Length: 181
Image (cartoon, helix red, strand yellow):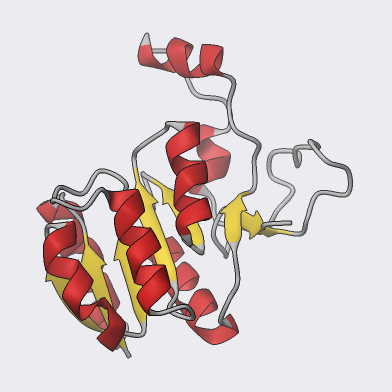
């Protein structure tokens, strides 16, 4: 199986690509959206970020890849905490958004799941943090749920809208994502 990894951070990209290669994937690495768009259609999945440089904005890149290859899994690995940008990525066609720090096995599971299940859409298991919590973190405070986000867990859809799973209530063997409604 072949993957296209379009990401600006060469260290992260190389680390994830090496891990995925060790798991049997052929990985093509590109550092800009311009380089990645022409070859996206010939792969089994695309992995990208939300801060990738290029003439094409990363969200627009996702939209174009989705338009040229409607069934192609698109996975985003990002440190971007802007909720509107993450929502725009989903709106453009991303199947999964994984927040950094993201363990390589979490990315592997997301890749395997989206390739095997086809048009699956996954989103973070925990509700987004309030902007005040993000500001507290920027001042050195601990983000709520930081350990839980690093643990891998596929959670079923929330029984009630807005309900947040209790910390430690999900298995530690799958990524911190849940199916989108």
